[in-house]
Image 1: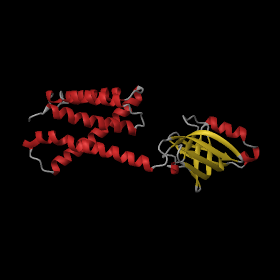
Image 2: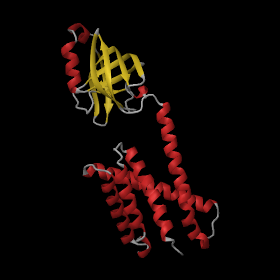
Image 3: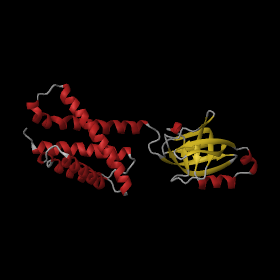
Length: 259
């Protein structure tokens, strides 16, 4: 089989850049264009070494080490976060490879034209990459809430509070039909300190299920939450606030229905 070096370099560069960026998006890591570019360039060069090895365990080991190296270059995070990024990157690599293999078989390309497929493989990769970017831009423009972290105003029992909120699509806690936002320990203590005893005495009890198990906690009802991204403001009424003893990066975990 003939290998066209320039096609292999360009092909793998585009694919690595797309998959490394996608893995960073999924793991919610900040994408640094220069780091992704350098990692993709190194990945393209390393791909030229693959034909030098036979299909054995050493080649697989070499590819794994290459992938870990690319993740360490692409994202500037701690070891565990980088390994998480690498795992997603590997998963995307398998999915993309399977997709390209399916396309190859779908068009019934003869084996003798494998080198032609390598030469043309980058075309759908480039198209998919740029179409994805365009689609993401459209989604961002049409979605009023563009980030996950917001400065929130909470109105409860005639008082106003301000806190940093995190929009978590995984928060599906309801008290009846009332969406429940989860307050961290510090914000819960603020609410307990500022609210009157009468307001706290009216608090209901709710059981929250999480990875650490079930836990009963107090919930304050009839709260109003105002979320703004600087351009658009959303107001949510009749919201529940669960008071917890847990520490979060944000003071309040917003309900998934707010997305």
